[in-house]
Length: 136
Image (cartoon, rainbow, N blue to C red; front, side, top):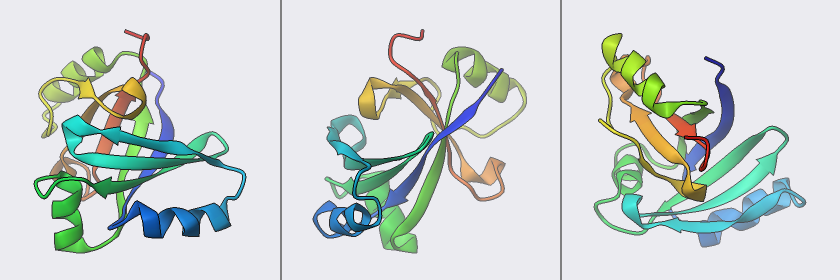
């Protein structure tokens, strides 16, 4: 099964403060801002070649991003890898004994199906698996 790094998630306190910084770094690469109510976040994407940066701001006090920033501060939050069949990959990882945050895929930014692998199973790195909409 082929996987590809699609974005690096960066937790930020404020998109209003962070987007201008990244817009100055990557002036031609900003894609847009989107709200993901299910996860209590707003995201801004910057396309940088085949991989993107995803700036992620909490919109709710219970958001995992808010908890992350409160505990660790702003910075790299996760790596996201695209997979062709998220259901098959989820089953494979469960059988291999990985600790998963999600028992089943949910809707993420861009309408993608996503699941997260707990950092305790991946040397302290939060990993997101993502499947494009319509690839099911």
